[in-house]
Image (cartoon, rainbow, N blue to C red; front, side, top):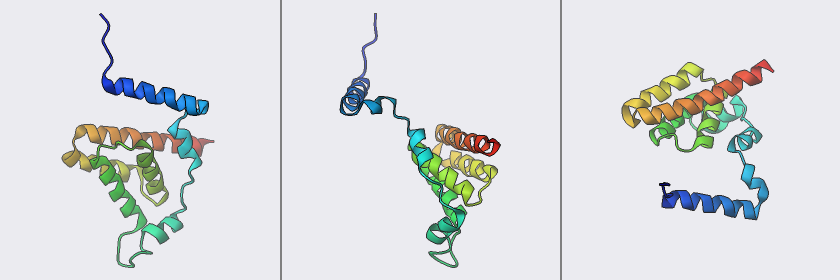
Length: 136
């Protein structure tokens, strides 16, 4: 006996077929390829826009980005591209891999282990990509 597909699975198949019909290149679209086209902002630019440029006594860009990682983790780390880009920018703003991991781990108390695990997987992808880039 074969298992029938859920309405969601059928809808996703139909959406994929429609995307292929509109643009055949979408059949092999990879969001990670898109992420690599998006430049990482220099630390000074992030500091100006998101750090102490807003408030001299306020949070620096690194802290703001770590808070964003915490918020995205709380939402279940569902937005893969946004999560990976935020991790990449946090590292550029001076956050260490340990600080990123600690931020995510802290959220396990509030968001749960599945959200933390998903966030750690995404962060690890960014950190491994950074190591590969450093080696080349």
